Length: 258
Ligand SMILES: [Zn+2]
Image (spheres, rainbow, N blue to C red):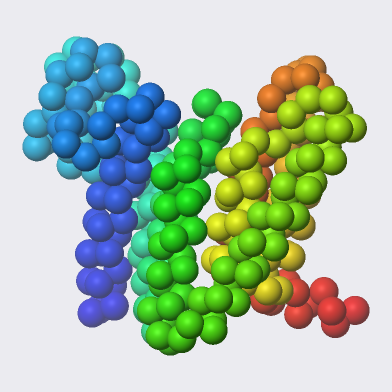
């Protein structure tokens, strides 16, 4: 019973983080103040009260509408809170014996959700998220064993991964004669290297490129997008990072058994 009680408390925490992430996704690309300004309705600008800020429940209670202007609030807000509530309790259930791994994993999921949503809508990966996560990762790696060598090793993997992405972006831009990947993708690749380390970074980049290609083929064939339309590559890299963070080592071992 104690385990279930703890999972429920952790889920509430996850939902609260989800509601903060929703706010970041709205404000970061619009360059609005993300700390001091109180939450407001994007339609009527009304400052939200305490009842409006209860994650998940307020959405259900007001049936997905702002309770001042009755405009629909995207289902996305609810899904982000739900996803992070679920993630938090899963992580607690699965990894509470490995606190650093669990905390870093949760931050990776939360930051990843923000990156995916912002990249789809604005085709950018904000520095505050990519470089901020890179710094947080190195801090957590250092806190794990208080060793400089492990921190330096992850820094080196991060730099290598970033350099690899830079070389790839440069080559692709020469071949396609247009910018193929943004600076945000390069910075995120560096963060990927730091959080994954070797050999999980290989798995993460491979899965990222695989999913990126599938998204590109889907966009070209089904959505009839032109070759010149921007295809957000960031979301694919984030998904690759998620899978590699939790199961990368297993996938790597499984591959080499053949
Ligand atoms: Zn409103």
